Each structure stands twice: as C-alpha cells, then as structure tokens.
Length: 97
Image (cartoon, rainbow, N blue to C red; front, side, top):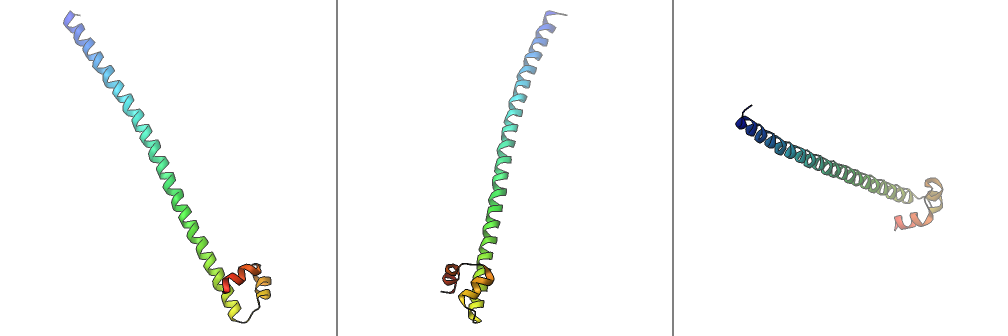
C-alpha cells in the first residue's frame, strides 16, 4: 500500500469516526426528545382525564341538587329526603335554598 493510500485510509477512518460520533449524539438527542414527548403526552392524557372527571363530578352534583329540589317541591320533608337519599340534613337545606 502506498503512502498516499495510507493517508487516504486514515482520512476516511477519521471522517467515519466523526460521522459515527455525530450519529451517536443524534441518537442521544432523539432519545431525549422522545422521552420529553412521551412525558408531555402522558401529562396531556392525565390533564384530559382530570377534566373529564371534573365534568362528571359536576354533572353528578347538579343531578343530586335537581333531585333533592324536585323531592322537596313534591312535598317531601327534609327528613324523608334525608332518609331516602342518604344525604345530610345540611346538604339538603343548602340545596333547597
């Protein structure tokens, strides 16, 4: 092998190491980016689930208040509503006000 071929081989090897280093660095960056995106995706998912849960809880509360008011309007006493629904006297009184 000539000296020139040997120099070309060294240059090619040097470039290969440089490129390989960049590939490893890019792979690390890609993995970090994927981890960040996964974390954001999880956060978005749980934020949406929390929002859905809060909406369901609000609907349940509104239904509860509507039922208590309707029972009271139909002439049921607070004690009867308390016995049937299991809600406290205070909850019932606050709802019918």
